[in-house]
Image 1: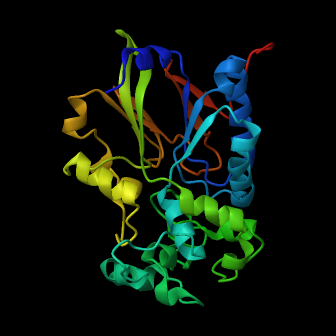
Image 2: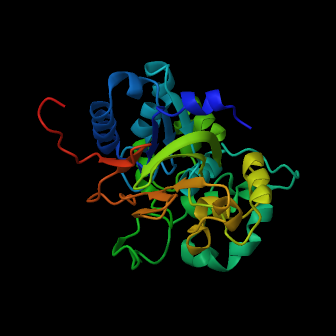
Image 3: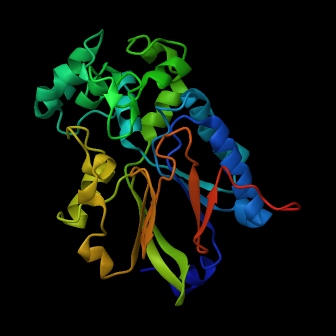
Length: 318
Protein backbone atom coordinates (compact mmCIF):
# COMPACT_ATOMS: atom_id res chain seq x y z
CA UNK A 1 0.00 0.00 0.00
CA UNK A 2 1.45 3.38 -1.00
CA UNK A 3 1.62 6.07 1.65
CA UNK A 4 -0.23 9.37 1.54
CA UNK A 5 3.12 11.09 0.94
CA UNK A 6 3.76 8.89 -2.10
CA UNK A 7 0.32 9.73 -3.48
CA UNK A 8 0.78 13.45 -2.89
CA UNK A 9 4.25 13.56 -4.47
CA UNK A 10 2.96 11.78 -7.59
CA UNK A 11 0.03 14.15 -8.10
CA UNK A 12 1.91 16.42 -10.50
CA UNK A 13 3.96 13.70 -12.19
CA UNK A 14 3.55 13.59 -15.94
CA UNK A 15 3.01 10.24 -17.65
CA UNK A 16 3.30 10.13 -21.44
CA UNK A 17 2.00 7.10 -23.35
CA UNK A 18 3.14 6.90 -26.97
CA UNK A 19 1.28 4.85 -29.56
CA UNK A 20 2.59 2.43 -32.16
CA UNK A 21 5.49 3.87 -34.19
CA UNK A 22 5.79 1.22 -36.91
CA UNK A 23 9.10 2.31 -38.38
CA UNK A 24 8.38 6.01 -38.98
CA UNK A 25 11.33 7.99 -37.66
CA UNK A 26 10.12 11.35 -38.99
CA UNK A 27 6.82 10.91 -37.17
CA UNK A 28 8.60 9.90 -33.97
CA UNK A 29 10.91 12.93 -34.08
CA UNK A 30 8.02 15.32 -34.76
CA UNK A 31 5.89 13.78 -32.00
CA UNK A 32 8.77 13.96 -29.52
CA UNK A 33 9.36 17.61 -30.39
CA UNK A 34 5.67 18.41 -29.98
CA UNK A 35 5.54 16.68 -26.59
CA UNK A 36 8.59 18.64 -25.48
CA UNK A 37 6.93 21.88 -26.61
CA UNK A 38 3.58 21.13 -24.94
CA UNK A 39 5.02 20.55 -21.48
CA UNK A 40 7.00 22.71 -19.06
CA UNK A 41 10.68 21.81 -19.32
CA UNK A 42 10.89 20.34 -15.81
CA UNK A 43 7.75 18.22 -16.36
CA UNK A 44 9.04 16.82 -19.64
CA UNK A 45 12.53 16.17 -18.31
CA UNK A 46 11.17 14.15 -15.36
CA UNK A 47 8.27 12.40 -17.12
CA UNK A 48 7.50 8.71 -17.13
CA UNK A 49 7.39 7.83 -20.83
CA UNK A 50 5.70 4.57 -21.82
CA UNK A 51 6.07 3.37 -25.38
CA UNK A 52 3.19 1.03 -26.17
CA UNK A 53 5.02 -1.25 -28.61
CA UNK A 54 5.18 -2.05 -32.34
CA UNK A 55 8.33 -0.14 -33.24
CA UNK A 56 8.95 -2.05 -36.47
CA UNK A 57 7.29 -2.96 -39.81
CA UNK A 58 5.20 -1.02 -42.35
CA UNK A 59 7.23 2.20 -42.15
CA UNK A 60 10.70 2.48 -43.76
CA UNK A 61 12.87 3.35 -40.77
CA UNK A 62 12.77 0.58 -38.15
CA UNK A 63 16.54 0.70 -37.65
CA UNK A 64 16.49 4.47 -37.00
CA UNK A 65 13.46 4.17 -34.70
CA UNK A 66 15.29 1.63 -32.53
CA UNK A 67 18.41 3.82 -32.51
CA UNK A 68 16.26 6.74 -31.28
CA UNK A 69 14.62 4.69 -28.53
CA UNK A 70 17.90 3.17 -27.36
CA UNK A 71 19.42 6.66 -27.09
CA UNK A 72 16.72 8.09 -24.81
CA UNK A 73 18.05 7.02 -21.38
CA UNK A 74 21.39 8.75 -22.00
CA UNK A 75 19.82 11.82 -23.63
CA UNK A 76 17.13 12.23 -20.96
CA UNK A 77 18.60 10.72 -17.79
CA UNK A 78 15.90 12.17 -15.51
CA UNK A 79 13.06 10.57 -17.47
CA UNK A 80 11.86 7.03 -16.83
CA UNK A 81 11.38 4.98 -20.01
CA UNK A 82 9.25 1.87 -20.40
CA UNK A 83 9.40 -0.05 -23.68
CA UNK A 84 6.52 -2.48 -24.10
CA UNK A 85 6.69 -5.42 -26.48
CA UNK A 86 4.19 -5.38 -29.32
CA UNK A 87 3.19 -8.36 -31.42
CA UNK A 88 5.32 -7.05 -34.30
CA UNK A 89 8.34 -6.65 -32.02
CA UNK A 90 7.81 -10.17 -30.65
CA UNK A 91 7.84 -11.59 -34.18
CA UNK A 92 10.88 -9.52 -35.22
CA UNK A 93 12.73 -10.71 -32.10
CA UNK A 94 11.75 -14.30 -32.88
CA UNK A 95 13.27 -14.07 -36.35
CA UNK A 96 16.62 -12.62 -35.23
CA UNK A 97 17.06 -14.83 -32.15
CA UNK A 98 16.23 -12.18 -29.56
CA UNK A 99 13.39 -13.91 -27.71
CA UNK A 100 13.97 -15.36 -24.24
CA UNK A 101 13.78 -19.16 -24.33
CA UNK A 102 10.57 -20.89 -23.22
CA UNK A 103 10.66 -21.25 -19.43
CA UNK A 104 9.49 -24.87 -19.67
CA UNK A 105 12.51 -25.80 -21.79
CA UNK A 106 10.46 -26.69 -24.86
CA UNK A 107 11.82 -25.90 -28.34
CA UNK A 108 10.33 -23.01 -30.29
CA UNK A 109 9.26 -25.53 -32.94
CA UNK A 110 6.61 -26.71 -30.48
CA UNK A 111 4.72 -23.46 -31.22
CA UNK A 112 4.09 -24.31 -34.88
CA UNK A 113 1.17 -26.71 -34.52
CA UNK A 114 -1.65 -24.25 -33.78
CA UNK A 115 -1.01 -22.21 -36.94
CA UNK A 116 0.20 -25.01 -39.23
CA UNK A 117 -2.95 -24.91 -41.38
CA UNK A 118 -2.01 -21.35 -42.39
CA UNK A 119 1.59 -22.15 -43.30
CA UNK A 120 1.14 -22.39 -47.06
CA UNK A 121 -1.06 -19.31 -47.46
CA UNK A 122 1.19 -17.24 -45.21
CA UNK A 123 4.34 -18.55 -46.89
CA UNK A 124 6.19 -19.29 -43.66
CA UNK A 125 9.94 -18.73 -43.62
CA UNK A 126 11.85 -21.93 -44.51
CA UNK A 127 15.37 -20.52 -44.76
CA UNK A 128 18.44 -21.02 -42.60
CA UNK A 129 17.57 -21.21 -38.92
CA UNK A 130 13.85 -21.94 -39.27
CA UNK A 131 14.11 -25.32 -37.50
CA UNK A 132 13.95 -23.83 -34.03
CA UNK A 133 12.21 -20.53 -34.69
CA UNK A 134 9.05 -19.44 -32.88
CA UNK A 135 6.01 -19.63 -35.16
CA UNK A 136 5.59 -15.85 -35.11
CA UNK A 137 9.14 -15.43 -36.43
CA UNK A 138 8.38 -17.78 -39.30
CA UNK A 139 5.15 -15.90 -40.11
CA UNK A 140 6.99 -12.56 -39.85
CA UNK A 141 9.82 -13.53 -42.20
CA UNK A 142 7.61 -15.39 -44.67
CA UNK A 143 5.97 -14.21 -47.89
CA UNK A 144 2.19 -14.24 -47.91
CA UNK A 145 0.58 -15.52 -51.11
CA UNK A 146 -2.45 -13.22 -50.90
CA UNK A 147 -0.86 -9.98 -52.04
CA UNK A 148 -3.83 -7.75 -51.11
CA UNK A 149 -4.83 -7.07 -47.52
CA UNK A 150 -8.58 -6.53 -47.84
CA UNK A 151 -8.93 -5.42 -44.22
CA UNK A 152 -6.50 -2.53 -44.70
CA UNK A 153 -7.27 -1.91 -48.37
CA UNK A 154 -3.64 -2.17 -49.39
CA UNK A 155 -1.03 -4.70 -50.48
CA UNK A 156 0.86 -6.66 -47.86
CA UNK A 157 4.48 -5.58 -47.51
CA UNK A 158 6.07 -8.99 -47.86
CA UNK A 159 4.59 -10.97 -44.98
CA UNK A 160 1.48 -11.17 -42.85
CA UNK A 161 3.27 -8.68 -40.56
CA UNK A 162 4.29 -6.25 -43.35
CA UNK A 163 7.89 -6.95 -42.40
CA UNK A 164 9.65 -6.20 -45.71
CA UNK A 165 10.46 -2.56 -44.78
CA UNK A 166 12.16 -3.76 -41.58
CA UNK A 167 14.48 -6.05 -43.52
CA UNK A 168 15.23 -3.24 -45.97
CA UNK A 169 15.99 -0.77 -43.16
CA UNK A 170 18.88 -3.05 -42.17
CA UNK A 171 20.09 -3.35 -45.76
CA UNK A 172 18.94 -6.90 -46.56
CA UNK A 173 16.11 -8.15 -48.79
CA UNK A 174 12.85 -9.35 -47.31
CA UNK A 175 13.03 -12.92 -46.03
CA UNK A 176 16.84 -13.04 -45.90
CA UNK A 177 18.32 -15.00 -42.97
CA UNK A 178 21.16 -12.46 -43.10
CA UNK A 179 18.95 -10.10 -41.11
CA UNK A 180 20.11 -11.81 -37.91
CA UNK A 181 23.68 -10.71 -38.72
CA UNK A 182 22.67 -7.24 -39.92
CA UNK A 183 20.77 -6.27 -36.76
CA UNK A 184 23.23 -4.66 -34.31
CA UNK A 185 23.76 -6.31 -30.94
CA UNK A 186 22.29 -3.37 -29.03
CA UNK A 187 19.09 -3.72 -31.06
CA UNK A 188 18.87 -7.41 -30.16
CA UNK A 189 19.39 -6.58 -26.49
CA UNK A 190 16.66 -3.94 -26.74
CA UNK A 191 14.24 -6.48 -28.25
CA UNK A 192 15.17 -9.11 -25.67
CA UNK A 193 14.54 -6.70 -22.79
CA UNK A 194 11.13 -5.42 -23.92
CA UNK A 195 8.53 -5.89 -21.19
CA UNK A 196 5.17 -7.51 -21.86
CA UNK A 197 3.31 -5.57 -19.17
CA UNK A 198 4.03 -2.60 -16.94
CA UNK A 199 2.29 -1.67 -13.68
CA UNK A 200 2.43 1.77 -12.11
CA UNK A 201 0.85 2.94 -8.85
CA UNK A 202 -0.43 6.43 -8.11
CA UNK A 203 -1.06 7.74 -11.60
CA UNK A 204 -3.40 10.71 -11.70
CA UNK A 205 -6.06 11.28 -14.32
CA UNK A 206 -8.44 14.20 -14.84
CA UNK A 207 -12.06 14.00 -15.96
CA UNK A 208 -15.24 16.01 -15.58
CA UNK A 209 -15.49 15.00 -11.93
CA UNK A 210 -12.00 16.09 -11.00
CA UNK A 211 -8.60 14.48 -10.51
CA UNK A 212 -8.32 10.84 -9.44
CA UNK A 213 -5.45 8.61 -8.36
CA UNK A 214 -5.41 5.22 -10.08
CA UNK A 215 -3.29 2.24 -10.75
CA UNK A 216 -2.06 2.07 -14.35
CA UNK A 217 -1.39 -1.06 -16.39
CA UNK A 218 0.23 -0.70 -19.79
CA UNK A 219 0.09 -3.67 -22.17
CA UNK A 220 0.30 -3.63 -25.95
CA UNK A 221 -3.14 -5.02 -26.88
CA UNK A 222 -4.94 -5.36 -23.55
CA UNK A 223 -5.96 -7.94 -20.97
CA UNK A 224 -8.32 -10.82 -21.56
CA UNK A 225 -11.61 -10.07 -19.86
CA UNK A 226 -12.48 -13.75 -19.43
CA UNK A 227 -9.23 -14.70 -17.66
CA UNK A 228 -8.16 -13.93 -14.11
CA UNK A 229 -5.85 -10.94 -13.92
CA UNK A 230 -3.29 -12.47 -11.55
CA UNK A 231 -2.73 -15.45 -13.84
CA UNK A 232 -2.29 -13.14 -16.83
CA UNK A 233 0.09 -10.93 -14.87
CA UNK A 234 2.25 -13.87 -13.84
CA UNK A 235 2.44 -15.17 -17.42
CA UNK A 236 3.23 -11.77 -18.91
CA UNK A 237 5.90 -10.95 -16.35
CA UNK A 238 7.51 -14.33 -17.00
CA UNK A 239 7.54 -13.61 -20.78
CA UNK A 240 6.41 -17.14 -21.53
CA UNK A 241 7.54 -17.71 -25.12
CA UNK A 242 6.20 -21.26 -25.19
CA UNK A 243 2.82 -19.68 -26.07
CA UNK A 244 2.00 -19.66 -29.78
CA UNK A 245 0.10 -16.35 -29.67
CA UNK A 246 0.19 -14.05 -26.65
CA UNK A 247 -3.29 -12.55 -26.50
CA UNK A 248 -2.19 -9.54 -24.43
CA UNK A 249 0.11 -8.59 -27.33
CA UNK A 250 -2.04 -9.79 -30.25
CA UNK A 251 -5.70 -10.04 -29.23
CA UNK A 252 -8.55 -7.92 -30.54
CA UNK A 253 -12.12 -8.02 -29.20
CA UNK A 254 -11.12 -10.34 -26.35
CA UNK A 255 -8.75 -7.72 -24.88
CA UNK A 256 -10.76 -4.58 -25.62
CA UNK A 257 -12.52 -4.18 -22.26
CA UNK A 258 -11.17 -3.83 -18.74
CA UNK A 259 -11.41 -7.09 -16.72
CA UNK A 260 -14.11 -6.83 -14.07
CA UNK A 261 -11.73 -7.28 -11.13
CA UNK A 262 -9.78 -4.22 -12.26
CA UNK A 263 -12.90 -2.09 -12.54
CA UNK A 264 -13.57 -2.58 -8.84
CA UNK A 265 -10.25 -0.93 -7.95
CA UNK A 266 -9.89 1.99 -10.39
CA UNK A 267 -7.25 0.93 -12.92
CA UNK A 268 -6.23 2.67 -16.11
CA UNK A 269 -5.56 0.16 -18.90
CA UNK A 270 -3.54 1.76 -21.69
CA UNK A 271 -2.70 0.00 -24.94
CA UNK A 272 -1.81 0.56 -28.57
CA UNK A 273 -2.27 -2.13 -31.23
CA UNK A 274 -5.87 -1.59 -32.34
CA UNK A 275 -5.35 0.96 -35.10
CA UNK A 276 -7.50 3.64 -33.53
CA UNK A 277 -7.72 6.26 -30.84
CA UNK A 278 -10.32 5.17 -28.28
CA UNK A 279 -10.81 6.70 -24.85
CA UNK A 280 -13.65 5.39 -22.71
CA UNK A 281 -13.39 5.99 -18.99
CA UNK A 282 -10.13 4.43 -17.83
CA UNK A 283 -9.65 2.35 -21.00
CA UNK A 284 -7.16 4.17 -23.20
CA UNK A 285 -6.24 2.86 -26.66
CA UNK A 286 -3.61 5.03 -28.30
CA UNK A 287 -2.88 3.82 -31.82
CA UNK A 288 -4.21 6.44 -34.18
CA UNK A 289 -1.52 5.65 -36.73
CA UNK A 290 -2.02 1.91 -37.13
CA UNK A 291 1.22 1.84 -39.12
CA UNK A 292 -0.40 3.61 -42.09
CA UNK A 293 1.62 6.35 -43.74
CA UNK A 294 -1.28 8.78 -44.04
CA UNK A 295 -2.24 8.58 -40.34
CA UNK A 296 -0.69 10.51 -37.45
CA UNK A 297 1.13 8.93 -34.54
CA UNK A 298 -0.44 9.98 -31.25
CA UNK A 299 0.44 10.15 -27.57
CA UNK A 300 -1.60 10.91 -24.47
CA UNK A 301 -0.37 12.99 -21.53
CA UNK A 302 -1.60 12.21 -18.03
CA UNK A 303 -3.11 13.56 -15.88
CA UNK A 304 -4.51 16.11 -18.34
CA UNK A 305 -5.61 13.50 -20.95
CA UNK A 306 -4.25 15.77 -23.69
CA UNK A 307 -3.70 14.09 -27.05
CA UNK A 308 -0.56 15.14 -28.93
CA UNK A 309 0.17 14.11 -32.53
CA UNK A 310 3.19 14.30 -34.75
CA UNK A 311 1.11 16.40 -37.16
CA UNK A 312 0.20 19.09 -34.61
CA UNK A 313 1.22 22.62 -35.56
CA UNK A 314 1.87 24.49 -32.36
CA UNK A 315 1.06 28.19 -31.95
CA UNK A 316 3.96 30.59 -32.33
CA UNK A 317 5.94 30.89 -29.13
CA UNK A 318 5.08 27.41 -27.87
